[in-house]
Length: 491
Image 1 (cartoon, rainbow, N blue to C red):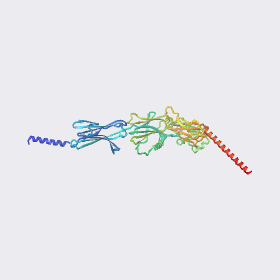
Image 2 (cartoon, helix red, strand yellow):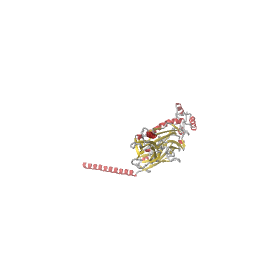
Image 3 (tube, rainbow, N blue to C red):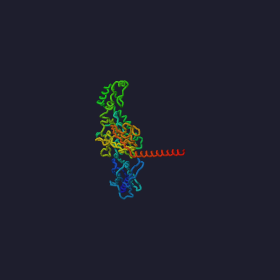
């Protein structure tokens, strides 16, 4: 074989080898740059990078909707109808083309949260009729700061009782956050060391079996459970206990702690006979001056929180703080609920100051009531303390009439307003009492009703008497005429 022929065969084999090594399809890889969570209202730019040795055909951006069941097209670039590379940047690296397509989402909203896909199509360089497709995806997380935060008292309004210890529950309600925030309580600016009572629970927006009313009933049931736990761990107040015991022993009574009723120790059969020959201690000394329940200066705080998903995907969190209330120590105490969230630069908080009601201010309308008027006595406000901006928790108002029943016959009436419909003259000078009470204390305010004569009613009465007299005179005259006519006819 001659040398030229061998060279030709070698070149032919080399071309065949290169053609066999060359891929039949175009080269295309697509990826979207990862993006950190974006805060609600911010602007975000998504970047899709792809590398290919083919010619660009099209780019399509999709937002995946309804859990992947549907896709919404948000951007399209078609190379056949666009001469400029809008939203595109290319850079040649050896024989490949590197592109970057960007999509800008201004002021992202809750509905912008989810998966995004970038679909790219290029022409295969080996065949003008063949198109190579590839796609990349990313999950964009939109975080939303809480919309509102508030602190309420569970089971409010509630009465005050100085003879029975009661648990008190603060409920911190945080709405509109995504994801769920971290909630904690402070007292007078100091973080409260709490005892967790249950794991946090969550439910979807479709689960409506637990409404606000059931939430209160649950808190009330938990309060009863926590009551035994709190009171059994209290330290005894030796000063009050010794004073009570000394008073009882001086009168020959047996003090049986743990069996006392709401109005002091309950005597047994043997003690009943003893009472007949001993002096009875005034009730004000034993049961009112020294309550039969013991308070602690260092209560245990029990903490629980629940969360549920709202219809827009945000979370509603209810955090509950429960402890055995001490009116002497907790009055004028400042409690705050604070929230930490990745969308907040600083904690969000709501504050309340526990305060017992002090002398409700009453207003009467009309100010000078007349007989037959409808009188309204309304609670306008309170005499607030130096550090309290309002009375919290909400007081319970009870109306009574001193020395008698109300106009409608009831002994008492609840509410912020007492309505006396068409007051009679007999109510003149009546004293009405408004009792305001919450778990921290109670107070009374009195107001006297002065009823003036009503000239219109008096004039109407005189008119009625005049008409009645005229009718009577007419009747007498008519009767006399009949008698006179009868007498004339007979004669």
